[in-house]
Image 1 (cartoon, one colour):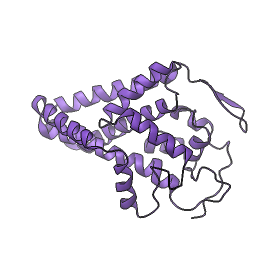
Image 2 (cartoon, rainbow, N blue to C red; image 1 turned 60 degrees about the vertical axis):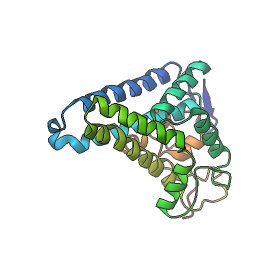
Image 3 (cartoon, helix red, strand yellow; image 1 turned 90 degrees about the horizontal axis):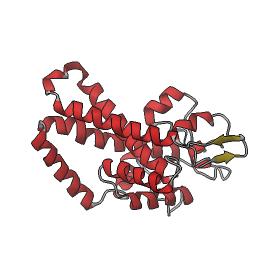
Length: 244
């Protein structure tokens, strides 16, 4: 699948690299999770917080993988691309792929309007709760509870809470803050048809904060550019300044 932006004349052909990167994130997350769950808590000492932050970042990568699959950039074969999307969405707190897919494309079509399921101008926490309500369902909550209890039978419950439950919650906050709140808060000029801002060019911070998803105007302008190639278009597009 190839995407081309006329203003940059850069072509993007993820091919099978999208699948390699997607599977790499899923495998690393699973391996790290098993390692963290199976170690006695006394073994972590000073690196407990870094371990939680690492797992949070990997959880965020799982959602970004599902997000790329929604735009068809994980694999050149549709069934394989969607299959990886299903798996990634499920691993990310049992999100339901069709609902996620439908809402995300509504966001792109109606960004900044009353029909946008993601944007809700207002105080941070009020917006965050509104955002969660669009995606969290009671079946998800039940599945999370069952999985938590099931994992607690196999591993120490405190490990399950610290390295499975808490990172899942923190990653939703990370995704919301860097991928929705910062890019879309405030008012935008009419020239900004995406109602989106963009992080200043800093590839290291852009990756650590949210897998380059902070380059948000670029993502809306070029939705078929995978996350791992977004840095290539940073600085090539003219982003209309935000009014507030």
